[in-house]
Image (cartoon, rainbow, N blue to C red; front, side, top):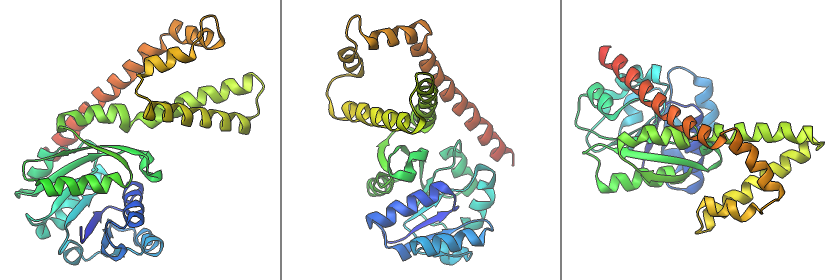
Length: 277
């Protein structure tokens, strides 16, 4: 790609800018960014990453290969309207706006444009996101590959149907919070059993890293890996029994199902708001 534009300059935009820049996919000066009115934020991004920041929307969009919509949902209409006159059929529009469907974006721009939706998570900040990507019928194979390459700079990226993005949200979009919730409980228990906070954190983090690497590199399913740690009559079995008695397994399933259902609900509400407006 020769030029990538970010409309919106929040944390997700910065994560992508930082990793795209570091990976050399686009030259720093060819990464353009704007926001609604926070000039101090734009100056900070310019100084930190060497990007081009401007409020001149015509200059911003001219010659762009990809335009990433990274504003908050409440600013989506105003943001799109500000750049809409300059969007052309040669550009790929990529939305990371939660809940905003491709169909709603198509209705707002009222042009035949190649549009992608991406659902990354907050681990993009350290290059460890899991991102789902969906496209409309105008996206070419080359544009799909380019979008995937952009999001692979912040972690894993996978093609999905748009109807699956709510499931991606419930599983991996919200997923980091589930892990942090588990770690909270492990930290509290560590204090109860007499371990110092800093030592406990180091042990917990290394345990998570080790388990994640085993899952990534082993061909064995998670169930088998768990059983291999769980010796009959041993300490792990005693702990797992408490989890089973408290239905933690079923609760986690319900947690992801509920998050997925809520994502669908929020998406429908957001789409209705834009259509009504």
